[in-house]
Length: 136
Ligand code: GTP
Ligand code: MG
Image 1 (cartoon, protein in one colour):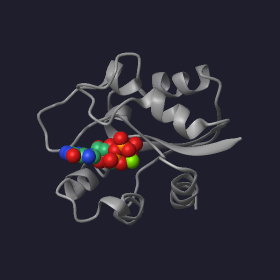
Image 2 (cartoon, helix red, strand yellow):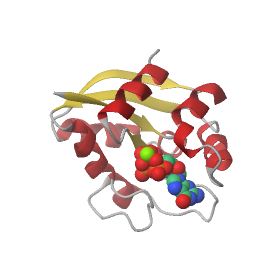
Image 3 (cartoon, protein in one colour):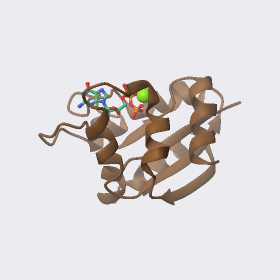
Image 4 (cartoon, helix red, strand yellow):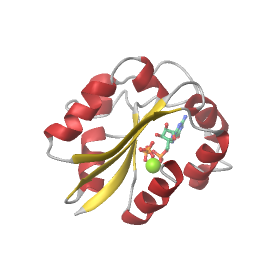
């Protein structure tokens, strides 16, 4: 078995999509083992998005993530890292495949940030690192 960090980003929480998003994770057969509504600090976000520091979208991304509460969760199951990223769909919500969270529920809003509803860890190393940041 494997675990991953899932975030429902501020756009997902503000739009009232948390339940639908978590339901898709559970419907695919993964288990939620941690779940918390929280308002992250800048410190948490700078650690979480460390790989993107220095990129042009870094500061808008951090500002967006500070704009309201997020839901942090740990999902567990065989190949859940790939499985959740497949459920989430491609980064850009306008063109993410229908059937995915981003493709069905997201779109562009003419802003600097990709408001794409969710985050999922991209490797076992990232998952353990990120779970340590959000559930210290
Ligand atoms: P996460 O699951 O959130 O990590 O998404 P991802 O793995 O599909 O994307 P990535 O880790 O590359 O980027 C993290 C977040 O930064 C994305 O989810 C977007 O919100 C934002 N982002 C990434 N690339 C771009 C970009 O080229 N332009 C803008 N404006 N935002 C971006
Ligand atoms: Mg990523």
